[in-house]
Image (cartoon, rainbow, N blue to C red; front, side, top):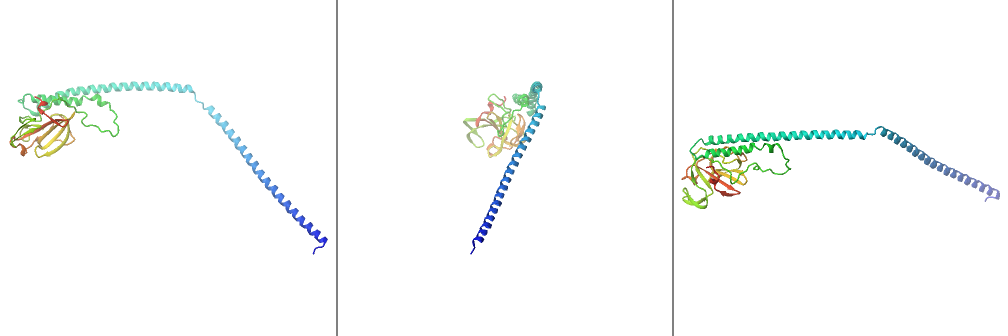
Length: 313
């Protein structure tokens, strides 16, 4: 048991210890607050410093920009010089167009000389004078074809852009019409006439039938010429017409040559009027009585037409 004196001392000591602990806690709180306040002040000072640095940097940048101001009058002078350059280019372009026109005229002159060449070629192809003027007219047709090819210099000199994926018709440069003239593929007599409106006698078969072509007699091995300029569309073997060649001549017209041999051209080749495409072959079993001959047919958009209406007289 504590006496009154001891109790008083004990209470005093305990109170002193609690007071001392409270004072230590208060000092810690005060020190913590001082640290936080110091941190806030440091952040504030750093922000002020960054702001001053930014102001100084902007000031220097503005000073640099003032020293590099562009004189707008110099730009106007530059535009004037550019206009003069465009005028020079336009004059050069006009000179170029005049040159193209000049080249086109020269090509037409070359085409005109091709006319005479075509006549000579036509006369030399057959070398016979007793074909009722046939060779002379045929040669003229060949010359016109060559002239037409040569005389397109102006159009060829100005290349037009072609859209990607657009197919170009290989027969675009070939034209043939009702008034066009065909060369005789070979010099000879017609042993079987064209007849689609009525039947005619087919000697070998011993029967009457229509005939969508004419059959021109000739010796085996004789050269066969293209009746008109065009593109070889197909070559095939037929039981009736043997080795057969189809040449498209433009505007829907197609010429067909049968009973051939020793072909001189292939599918896809371009041929000119009078060019040798092969020779006369042996007749098939369908033309034994008629003898060696060339089967020659003409069609328009798939419909047979009479070849004699287009052949030179």
